[in-house]
Image (cartoon, rainbow, N blue to C red):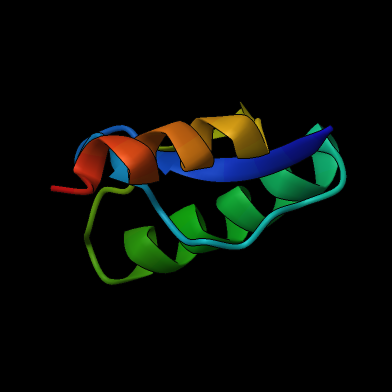
Length: 64
């Protein structure tokens, strides 16, 4: 299963990068959140499972 970072505050995927495990995804999220904190910003990221079929459905819905 692939994992992806979700930005809670903006209700959107944080990046398009996919990770092989939840742990790897959370490690990267922790780094991003620490960087944001260092410049007095708040970033709340979650590791969410990514299903490629969800992307296909979204793209189909966006087509006119």
